[in-house]
Amino acid sequence: MQAAMRFAEEHRDWIEVHYKEAVERQRNRKTYGAEEIRNFTEKLRPVLMHRVALYAACMDVTYGKITIRNQKRVGELQRSWNLNFNWRLALLPEDLMNYVIVHELAHRLE
Image 1 (cartoon, rainbow, N blue to C red):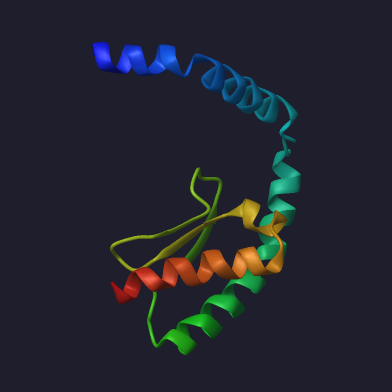
Image 2 (image 1 turned 135 degrees about the horizontal axis):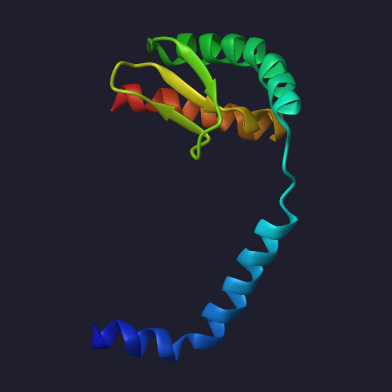
């Protein structure tokens, strides 16, 4: 406990700066209403279905169903091999969305 307190005290300036930045990012984060989220989800669903199928075939892996949720993680592979994706993927550039999809499918190879 003392070591942790000493570490925090020695890095106080860094902690304060980054804490303030995190608070400011949270304050400036756009909030979306239920209708906007529904629209993003509807537009994202066919894109995800296509890309997941494409990358799964390239990687020679299988998966269960695909669900789009309002969750903390961007993507998640369940033990049942179902894929859960955050609706906010619709806000990402295409290459980052592809990365998340491939990353989640790569868990099947582990």
